[in-house]
Length: 164
Image (tube, rainbow, N blue to C red; front, side):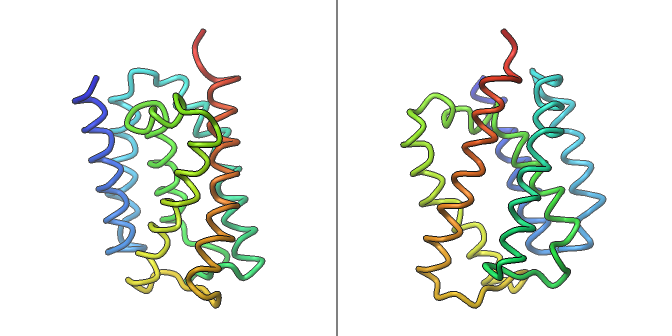
């Protein structure tokens, strides 16, 4: 199980770095990695449903954040590579980030508030997105919203999608 989690995390990180460094040119190789993540999944059906349910929520949040000028991408409202990156992230929920589901919801939410904005900050440093907010304001506002949205996805996964 640990090796499966490490592979899953490494594949997600590969998609993340491709998106960050290659942006639009990452689409085909990133999609190939997402397909590999699905292929390697021990809970392929649940992960497929998670993609179908989670992607609209995640991309809806990104659209809302973009519409509220919390962040801006070079492509409006957000680039296609972001959807592929989200797909890869969702495919970590039942494998390498499964620990979040085992934590009390408020601790998992706090972890997301603290650490999720770091990924977006890295994107800002590489100029794939930007914000007009001061960094601490972005971290707080975006982190609170992102964590709430992500915890909703995790709750849906645990409550409705998990195999019984």
